[in-house]
Image 1 (cartoon, rainbow, N blue to C red):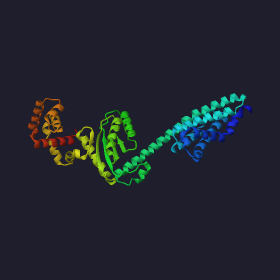
Image 2 (cartoon, helix red, strand yellow; image 1 turned 90 degrees about the vertical axis):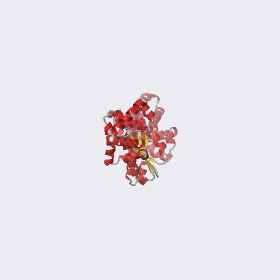
Image 3 (cartoon, one colour; image 1 turned 180 degrees about the vertical axis):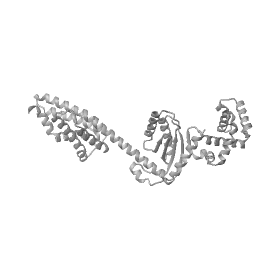
Length: 387
C-alpha cells in the first residue's frame, strides 16, 4: 500500500541506517572517534542496529511504546556498554544523533506526496527517543552504582585483611589499589549522636562519600582508616578537614605508625586505644599519638592503683568548681594567670580555690611533687568517671 511505503523502506533498511549512524557517531563524538574501526563495529554498530530495529518494529505495528521486553533489552545492553566504560554523555548523544540521522534519511527518501508519512515517522522517532533516553540513563546510573558498590566492598575487604594481618594481595588487585610498604593507622572520633537519626544517617553517608578510595570503615562513632605511610601527614590533614565538614563535628584523631604491613594490626589497636583514652579524658580536637598520652595510658591500666589515685580527689567531689579549677591549673602547666583567665576568675579567687583543694585533699597544688600527684589523681578520676 502507498501509505506504508516509507515505513516499509525504513524497516527494510535497518542495517544500512545503523551503519550510517555508526559512521556519524564516529565522526562527531570524540569518545567513539577514539575507537578503532574494529572495536566500533563490534560495539556501536550492533547497538545501533538493535535500537533502530526496535523503532522499526514498533512503527510497523503501530505501537506508541516499547514492550517491556524491548525496554529491558535496551537497559541490559546499555548497562553492558556502561560496564565497558561508555560515558553516559556519549551514549545519550549517540541516541540523539541516531534519531536525527534516521529522520534525515527518511526525509531524503520521501516523495513530494509523502509529507504525511514523514510527519508520522517523525512523531514516532521522537516518541521512541523519549522512551530510550530514560532507559539508557537508568542503565548507566545502575551500572555506575554497581561499580561504586563493588569498589567500596573491595576496599572494605582489603582494609579488613590488613587489619587482621592476613594476605591482602588478591584484595588489592580487586580494589585496583597498590599496596604500600608502610601504613599509618588512623582512628577518627566525632563524639555522640546528638542529632536526629535521619540527620545522622545523612552525615554518615556524606562521610562515606568524602572518604572516596581511602581504606576505611565508617560507624556512628567515627572512622577507622589506613593511610599509606608516604605522605600520611598531608593526607591526614585533608582527611580530618573533609570528614569534619561532612560530619558537622570537630574531629579527634589518634594515629600510630606501622613500619611494615605485618605491623598494621598492632598499630591499629594502639590507635584505637589512644582514641578511646583521649575521648575518656575529654581532650580537645586534634591529632594524638601514644606519646601524647603516655602517662594517662599507663594510669588507665586496670588495677587498684587507679582506684586509689582517683580516691585522692574524693574530698572535692562535691565541689565541681574546685575540680574544674584543678583541671585548668593542670592544663595550663600550673600557670596561675593562664588558669585564672581560662576560668574567667580573679587571681585571688584562683588562689583561694587552690588553698581549698589543699585543705580538703591534703595535697598542695603549689608543691611540685604534690602537684604531680594531683594531676595523676585528676586523670584517674576522669578515666574512671568518663568525665
